[in-house]
Length: 306
Length: 295
Image (cartoon, rainbow over all chains, first blue to last red; front, side):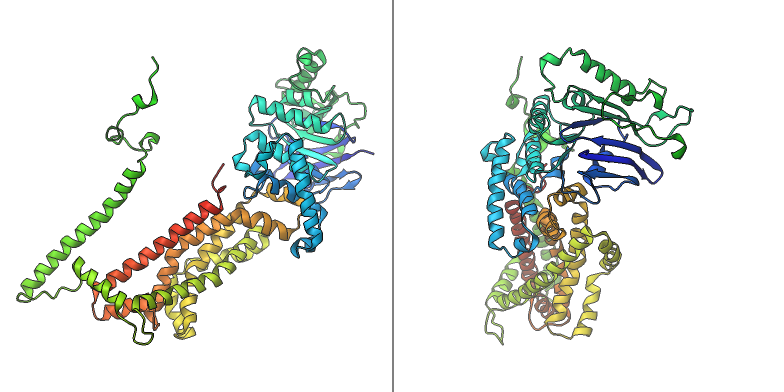
């Protein structure tokens, strides 16, 4: 059974279709990176998985259970730390809050019952361990988020997302806006946590090279496509779905001249990012090299052409 | 050749030639203090000059007798300070300044104690729950445009001359602005932050009181700080209309006898107290919320 299943998912906003019948099964332990041009629906896909949005049609499921509303099965890391961390709480309190939320109920917390204090103690111990695990110095735990650098903030955000031991880690361009060294550190941390398939990670990136290097599977979304009969459709589709060697450190010199890597980058660039130069991609040209990938080709008659 | 920063730094009198939006033209603390004092000195100088003119004119008009009461000399004002600080209230046998300050202070304190909690809770729920915002937002905005000082007579008519109308007048003075400030602050909390906390299993109640409220607290305190001016104005207006003690009441009594030498100290006393409260709230914000306005 797939760990994540986007089943014929479509997303429409007033006057605009973002996603069009995306069917995407993701197996447990995959590190899926999603790339595509700006506005193609990468973040929408992520928000659907996280439960922040509900699909206009189709469904999204994690572990066979349909996602409706914000899911506690998924941990989220955003690009901006202000969306991950509470500015008024220290780093330790930020991370510990996640554990408290899932391991004690509201009445325990409101009435400050002994069981709550036990959970609180556990939460703080666990948060400390996790913060050390993501490479944060011990003196950082008492600091406020604004006192940390961008890279440190992202490490705290990852620790916060991991403290509840989610089934899926969802990351929305967590390396954007970081300098090269810090970005490398965060990428290494993501790979360390993934550890060859210990958890499922859905990673959205605008950086093609990063996506191909990190992902064990790369999906490219594009709104530039037509049906074989010449009619064009609305809403992005997964037009590239390829397996990559994946999970490699981006800056590992051994892969610098890896032909497979360069091919992958070129393939995605050609099909998703810059489809056929000026000409939109025809669905029959859609690239699917992933062995488990289910065909995502929509049946032209069932899709309304707007 | 490399030049040091200090050698390239021009003296301040050269820098202020073109001071518009210049980052290298920010006054030092000493210069800022001197600049701040200048308007006060100008005000005092103008007052004294005008007072002298009026007193001179009064002497000419009244055959050598100085009957000028509207603009007393500073020494007369100092005598007025002594009077209000030492003259005892007939009922309480305590200096009238103390009696009035305590009476007004109590009203202000009670009004904020009652009103702020309700305003913050209402604003918080309006911001967090869009249906609540849609229901109360328009009415709060419309009522916020009603000049609160105009409502004071209505309150006196409705609630009599007891403490309630005066407290209500203050509440009306600050309630709408604090509610709207809280509403706006709560609405601005990023939805993604809230969804992130939902994914951690936190309930709506906890998100409201552990995530949103502490996050917007400095903005709420700032709104309270800014509302103080209107709150005090409404209190004075209500005390003018119906009270048996309080700074507004006293100024009203003194006005009837044209005792400007005592009214001016009262006015300055109110300004000083408000300034102190404002500074204390400012210090509280920087001490309690060091993360506020930090990127």
